Amino acid sequence: MAGSVQSSSRSGRRPGRYGAMSEINVTPFVDVMLVLLIVFMVTAPLLTVGVPIDLPKTSAANLEGNEEPLTVSINAKGEIFLQETPVKLAELVARLLAIAENQTARRIFVRGDRLVDYGAVMAVMGSLNSAGFNKVALVTEVPQGTIARKYAPGAK
Image (cartoon, rainbow, N blue to C red; front, top):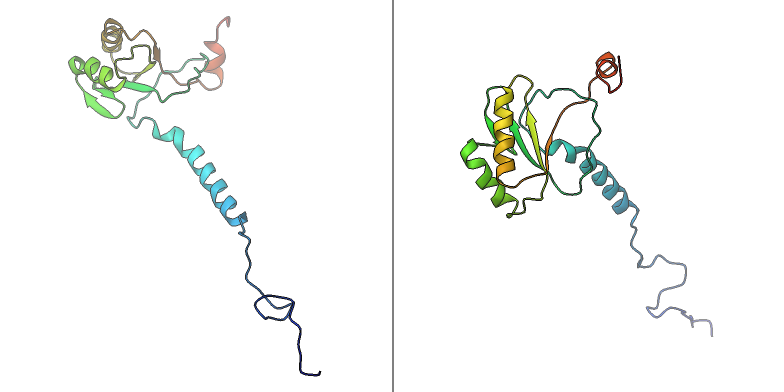
């Protein structure tokens, strides 16, 4: 019987031919996801607050936090910003309570420009404290070089 051909596959194809591949190649997917992860890790800290403030410098340690901070900024002109939105001092507490959902235990970061009047920063902190926000932190920049050594605790 010279004309009979035996086929070992169900579709009738000869063995060794190219067939449909039933595996998914995840390597390109993983590569793209790792690149996106790196991009978001780099850009996320830059997206927190966009009000330009010239912060004073200090050598204090950084605070650790798990939730997104609520930031109150005071620029050199004395204008007050909640995150990036300008607000008046009288409206500040009401808006903070609405955003924090009446949770006064939430940490509030106050960023005051180096040139702003000390009384303006204290007025903001006083209104926050009278509203029940007791976890108020001042944001500063770390000084560079000799300034850091000159003003470091215990330095002479």
